[in-house]
Length: 202
Figure (tube, rainbow, N blue to C red):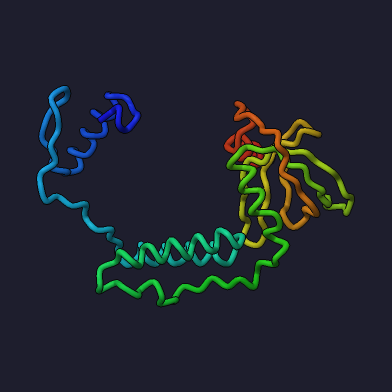
């Protein structure tokens, strides 16, 4: 099994132990073998009313306040959840009693968000033309670490190569951006959690 799954035997033993601990009917022992009781099925995905409302609200926030790709992803998530709900709850996701209006978010607020998410995921450096608060245009090469939503604005937390320090950039002030082929390392002291710690003190 370990060879088939390309994991260590220790991982298999640990995972089997975890499954037994949560009630999956597995017999056997390490070094001998395991057997799943016939007829066992994974229980259906279940949510209570509050959990469903949380899903709908969260998806609504993503649809209204994030980029178009994430909005479509939120729709797909809700469709998958709705497909596995029991009949008594089927269609409950369509009852919109928690509204998340998109009128507070202007299109420029999510400028470049799709590309920035890709750069963050792949740890690619980004070159961008950025308008500072005083209206001056600056060109920066940054390590994009994470995105933060502030209710009406998205900001990018990044390590700025030019300043050799953490910087916060508002997405609506980015005039142009380019994902570079050069990647940046996951370096101690320059990770997103380090940026958060820095930002909380400044």
